[in-house]
Length: 483
Ligand code: RAM
Image (cartoon, rainbow, N blue to C red; front, side, top):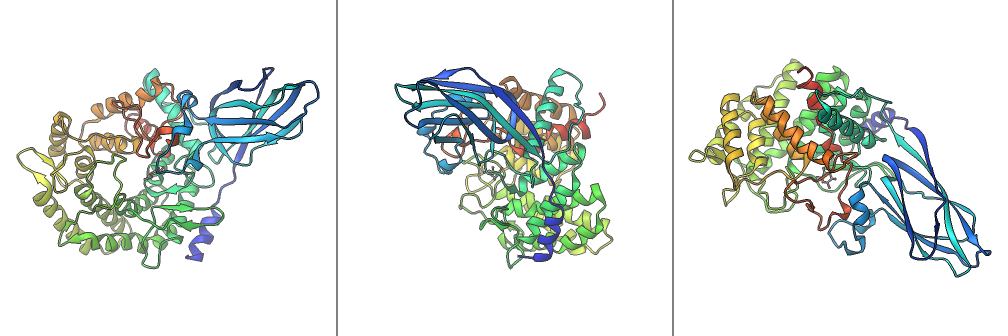
């Protein structure tokens, strides 16, 4: 652990502000009866239940089950059927005994929710239970309010939900999702930072997160995919090819926004290190494939082959490094020539001239992920990229995005290729689809063709307020502000 960097991260730790919310109720619940409380908006915070016994003197503890749900659909989810590979521990439900009544029961876990469902499992024939009040203290490190933007009702609604999504994920760090995993991931951070620069401008929070990643890099300088901060700061023991590399453009964006030369000078060697380490994955100038799940992320589609997309992310990151070095008036010749070689090789190895699309892996798989990242990597001109994106749209077999993370990159690729209007429409259709389905905050996974999409083996653990889906607020301000 680099203690100097850790100290800098801790110095930039924000204060959380909190707000009180409460709901009163008269409902009296007998065994197997339940009630749902709707707070009318998504909240991240700490809840207290005020309960009392109704009837004769209570002669047994009341046994209740309390569920916290981010969306109305989640209320209908049969959580007992969830058997996926991500821990059941994330399910937001508790079975508790109220030993004395009346009582005030405070949950010590922080929850993310709009709805709270209270179900009585057992009382006794002598008494029933009344939940008199639920009080919630919600928390965030986002500054108060940002004016909503957009040229029509739908865009304004999308912006409002996106702003709320980002602010709910702004805690002591930029969390990926306040329901799960509640921690700092690099891919999410990059998009949160971009959106933050256009909205809340809490730039010290970005700085803190950059230092947290830097402090926890391993002895070779490799940056982990995510960082835990409780009980103390620690890196995850795994890294992903693309996420480590994305440290570079995240640092570049931070510098271009803040001009904070001191931070950037301190973190620059680590940015260079990510490029150096990523080179180990190459045979000459072409990247090797790898079948370990999660070696490179790109998107949460389990059938996606990551080989070619990984090379595109490498080129994208190395170009960001070249730009950053130029900004700092530092030598960048070696990176420039390397990125040239890797780009030529990428076209030779992965570009299928007949189809006019990039293909990946042994089976020459076509996907949005691969092609979009090559557009972002700018191995072709913007005009050529525009035609490539047109061919991609018409390619029926192309694997489509399943997360707002991948959709963000698709919209960005359209904008960069001079197809802003299409980008805006794609954004409105995709994020607007979630708004139409009642989203108060945007989701981790959204596949309009499959409402049950989940890479985890069940959507009960999906997060419905997820950092990487906040970027319409970035697009609307940066590219679509006028007109
Ligand atoms: C999910 C996390 C996070 C993402 C990783 C790759 O489990 O919630 O958002 O960055 O996957």
